[in-house]
Image (cartoon, rainbow, N blue to C red; front, side):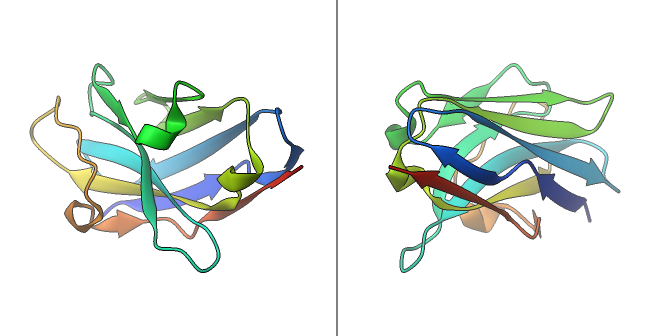
Length: 125
């Protein structure tokens, strides 16, 4: 099991930027992802990255505004979010999936077995 702790959320104006960070411990090789859940809505996929860091995948709404990257030496996965919109307001959670395949990226929630507690991102108009 992988333990995950997110940080970096907060309040930002529309058009601004935030960096979310996810610190992982207790695992070996694992693919990672960010998901988000807005009030009254289902949780949705944001971005995923392979263990190697060579492969990434994004939700359609991202439209080039977000970048996911990882530092396996520090056991962190970050999400750089630019040009934020009010509709990006949500609780953002990171998730981990242990995998021997170092190149796999996964966007389905049910594939992930470890989740962080989430961090709130609020974008004001």
